[in-house]
Each structure stands twice: as structure tokens, then as C-alpha cells.
Length: 162
Image 1 (cartoon, rainbow, N blue to C red):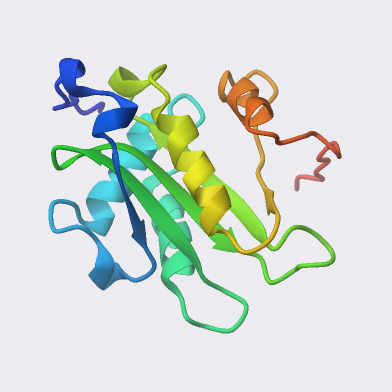
Image 2 (cartoon, one colour):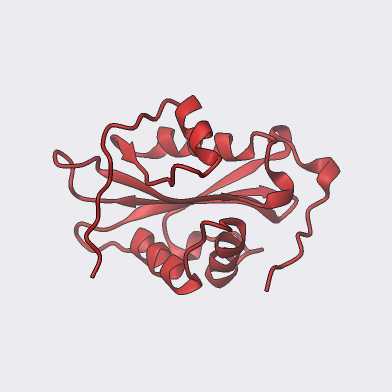
């Protein structure tokens, strides 16, 4: 069931964007909960969405202070409405793979094409300690954005699925 965006299309711009950096649940802005953030990501990632449960597990991982875990969440906001969100996880694998994985980046469909996603991704690159990797499907239009921001395709991902 898709949720109707409450964003005023006339106010959506990079100039009106405020980005919140969140490392712990208690740092969440008072106008959004973790559950609402997970639902926002689920809806805004379509048609490349993950389940709400998997998104919540990733948020929990980002908020963890356990050794080898952690990360941060970025929430893009205009007038206390989410317009975009990003989940960055620490891999604790520096040297083998980049120490950060950009797991989710999503922009509300009514806010796409206005530079919101690019601003959030650039902010995440500034905040991440070390290199960043992400997985993107070849047919995902966001792939062009990532390339414009300097990301390259170094390896083909291969999976054995049981």
C-alpha cells in the first residue's frame, strides 16, 4: 500500500533541504520515528525496495555500538517532511573491501530530479571515514547519479543462491 506524499512540490529544492545526521535512535528528529523512516525507505525505494523488516535491521546495525558494527543515517527534510534518506553501514572490513557500504539511498518520488539525492549522497561521502561501496542494479536510473558523483564500477558482483 503506497503512502501519499505530504510534500508541497513548490517548496522542494536543494536550497530548502535540511540534512539530519543520526547515529543513535535518540538522535532521530522528533517528527519521524524509526518505524516511519523504515516505511519511508521501503516506499521510496520502489521498484528496488527491500522489506520493512530488512530495512529496520539495517537501521539497527547502523545504530549499534557493538564492535565491528555501526554507521549512520541521513534524513533529508523539508518542513518536517522526509524527502530523502540514506543508511551507511561500517563494514569493519577495511583493506578487503571499503570500510563503508551505502546500503540504502531513497528520495520521495515527488522530490526526484531536483538534486536532493545527490546532496544527501555527497554529504554521506563527506561524513564516511574511508571509501564507500554500494550495490546498484544495472537498470536503476540512479546508477547515472552515482557515476556523476565519482563512483566507478570496479568489480562485477556474483552470487551463488541456494
